[in-house]
Length: 430
Image (cartoon, rainbow, N blue to C red; front, top):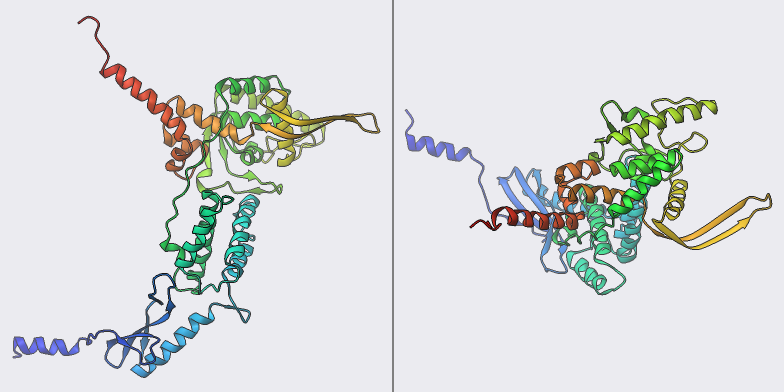
């Protein structure tokens, strides 16, 4: 029979011996002995952070073998991390990697040309600011110093700085995932998102004026797109990309499944939440019903067929409407009904005797402000934030609240007056 204390002693001899961290003899990092002479964990140092003066450390890696093998693997691990910052035999820079990252994103079908175009602005700025800095040499201290200079530059807004930082953080996050750098220096910097500027929306009188003008205008694909923008708050690309397959007149709703991009291709909506059903009112149902019949007749006259895949906003040739041509027509239409104006207007006659009007310098409402009108009117009339978020296709309710804080504040004022009238009203009979 084995004694209890002997059994305990026997158990202890089978457990791996725990030791404290042992520095490698060549000073390149630390080696921790997990199991004597068999298992080690290694972590090389990657130089010092210029701001904190502390050594940068790579993730721990497990090595099987003796201590000499652990030292050898330490050297190889450090070389591996250093080589990851090389590109075609040259030192990989922050600017070079950002450009590579941007070029690869151009091939993603899920990204719209507008998104790529906007990303290009930040990518060029990153190239300008950090183009020659080695990707493994960029530190949090360098970023703080650069951002301080940008804040002092009156030509760089808080919003622009936030966008540059967000893009750089995204780029360097990918570099960490690809094990090109050990950590992302952007992670230690907190730049608060600037408050969204207050969106402009049509006054109720102007919204009614637009609705009346659309009723009187001869129905066309362009007029229908405008009506949908006013009635539902959908984006321009969503209005131009809506097909009859996603119009449910019986249940008085439409479904946003795609958008028409500037390059005349159908793409996924802006975000996952942009896929949504939106209810439509009775007059919109009647308006679309009349247009469906009229469009069918017009297409048949051109030898074309109306199908579930036919866009509602077809042009004069029965084809997809060019977004830029639509916007030019929309500016003219707004100017004609008093919702905008042009600084310059030139009337001329071409050689065939046709009279033309050339306008430039537009000032006034745009299509996207129909979206803000929708939200402001809904909030002002008591719609809850989640409903507004859903109709607009925002990713979060907090985004909706941030954008339309002014409308919510107005509601809060009314709510305060209501509470005051209910609780603190005076009883004249006493």
